[in-house]
Length: 304
Ligand code: UTP
Image 1: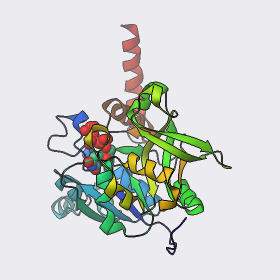
Image 2: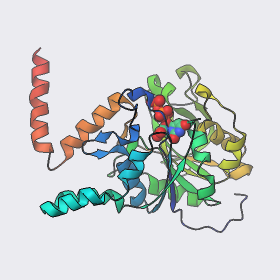
Image 3: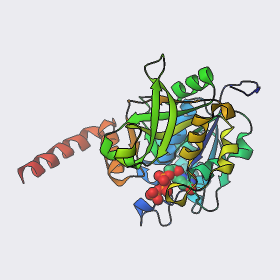
Image 4: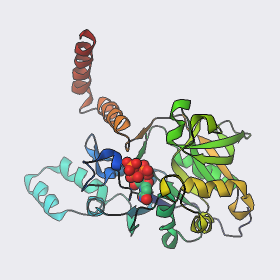
């Protein structure tokens, strides 16, 4: 590490949620995809809960058009609270208040959705000069398989930036950033030496895909300012991280934490459906009935 910053425990989380969500049209025409419900909570609430569970109590959400539902969800709704309170419906009242009591929420607007890298750059004035976490607003990590605390530990140990990696089937690597890696002394930590955004399988440096959690050195902002639009004409965070991986003197090395837990990409329709089925099956209140129905549905399908 070249920096002389005083170290404090990472406390800021940035959640980009300003993408167009085109894979989910028309549902996302007037609603951010991060607000789509996963069982009975919007996807974004799971993500904020994960940040809070990792002691990141200061949350900056990067929003765009249709930002109102996101802000409203994490704000008080006095009319609704009043109505539930009058009815004596305490459990629903508690559910309504959960999201507004979670964290200190801040918002910044991206304007044009010019890519994930650009969304992260919008966080610079809020983040300042300390390392910070980035959680993609449509990527859910199962709370039983915590990932961020390990990434924060690795960042504190090695400095620089840390990405989350997951081994995927070679046929899916074109959907992700792919990392060239070398092992470290820890079996779940690798050094990232190169990154390629959405490569064809034949050109992918590995089957280790970058998923939606990052712990970044603030030096990434200077690199992002110079990053030209890449894949899809968007300013890619992967391209800036690649620069950091190549020139570690700029802002430290890039490491990867290899994640083997449960993850759901709710921006993808198939994964979104799988997330709902799995989480509904596991719920104490809904699970027993839903699992029984699902079993009979699958039996019927098998007979056809
Ligand atoms: P995605 O590429 O999955 O989001 O970005 P998208 O562009 O909304 O999706 P599709 O492909 O059109 O369906 C990953 C995350 O980064 C955010 C998105 O909101 C999502 O949470 N993002 C992406 C931004 O905040 N700004 C952008 O310019 C792009």
